[in-house]
Length: 245
Image (cartoon, rainbow, N blue to C red; front, side, top):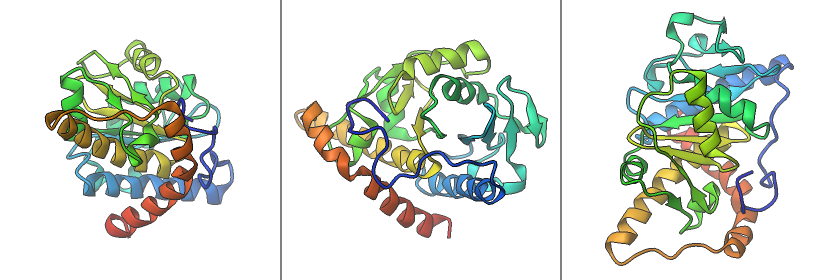
């Protein structure tokens, strides 16, 4: 769970599934595809971006290097902890798989990751401005979202570890000039957080134009966070019904 945002597991958010169970593995693959449709439908990605989910033995399920709206379930890749493709077409592996692998290695609480290129989050990154908690849904990201100050694509293990180090114990990290990485204990949580990261970024930029925003205190965020589990479930139901039915 992200820093200063209540208990480790938001009420109502399912813990990381045991995907050794065939039915759980099938459901996880379906969730990844639904998240792809939602992220594209919300214009958080356009032609780029990734969704991944943790698998047993430090492996992960990840989308190929293809626009998320176009990804088919049969195209999902299983990657080992060393970045080698265990299942699927190795030539379609996303260049930036390394940030996913490094994050899963550093954060056992993370069960899924969304990699987005939303405009207002990108604007904050370009301005070297971290995202701050100022409104209810944005609080899902914690008190702050830090900035990774590199601009190149994350194409090797060293760069992946640098991103994971900047992320630390937070829910997300902005990449200067290169979008954002958003984590969750589940695919639905990561996806919904990605939506509200962009909303929070838009509100922060607008609030600064009209006089400045008021930051949540730790106590305010802790109190607000008790509703986030229910809100993730409700938002996931809504957005998947709209874009991935």
